[in-house]
Image (cartoon, rainbow, N blue to C red; front, side, top):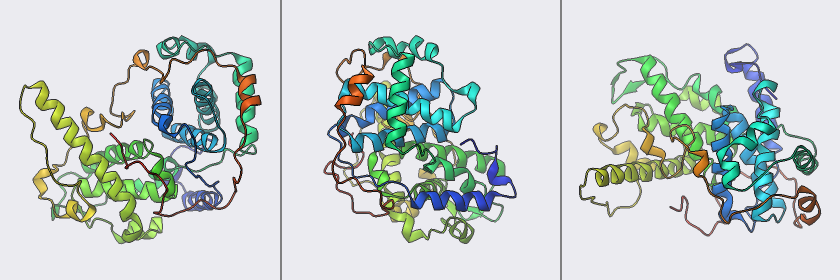
Length: 359
């Protein structure tokens, strides 16, 4: 589904938004029970790298990762098979979200350096079989809203003239809007890196990305009434997700500072405190987070596609997978029992033993 360009500025914006929120209520549940869950980060990065290579829209990238998450959650898939599954998810998502001329071609995919480094060769028949299996898994329904589908609608009023920066009128509204868009995009990519964000509704994740960006930019009020009315989320609803985003940002800033100091041959002093909470960010002095856009090193740990220069030829698979046989995939995948189609859970309680943003 390729929506009209800048639909959030049109007369039907409110209707389209409500349709997305309605679709959101019917999203399949996610249990985080894949035996290959520890490899999810690698394959999410693979999708992001190839998506960036073909300059696909964020909605296609986020939908591809979401399809991969749901598929891994329902089937036991080998590492070798996951490469074919990941690329097929990206192709399906791009066909659904992008114009036809922007969909990656088979020949171009096979010519990428990352494909040869993984010893992977895609075939037309293999991709068609895999795409068919995916479509049957999702009952031919790819209209699955992600945070990327909501973010532009929220950004349309994320920064307005009445907002204050450190208690003072903004020096430049346009620059602040530009910084807001870049930070929101950064936090949006952060949300792709850990499946723990799937415990939140996509619209809430998008709203949290805007809220976290306003905190970092020291805009007040942190969550103005207009955004609460537009999103339907109060500040209390956003805090758990915002805090996870800010913890990731804090870790990225420290890592970037560490790398910079190491390059300059300086001693790095680590903070002994815990990652900052939402309340602590609100109380930070203004000079700690000057009004500037994210730098390349900011997302080093998350490998955010928007701010990190990826080298597709250097990406190595977890265990050197060989050629993928999609016929074998179709016959060896066994659905997991107890998969229900209940409404998407919006809960902070998530059974994930590893710490958030394991670095």
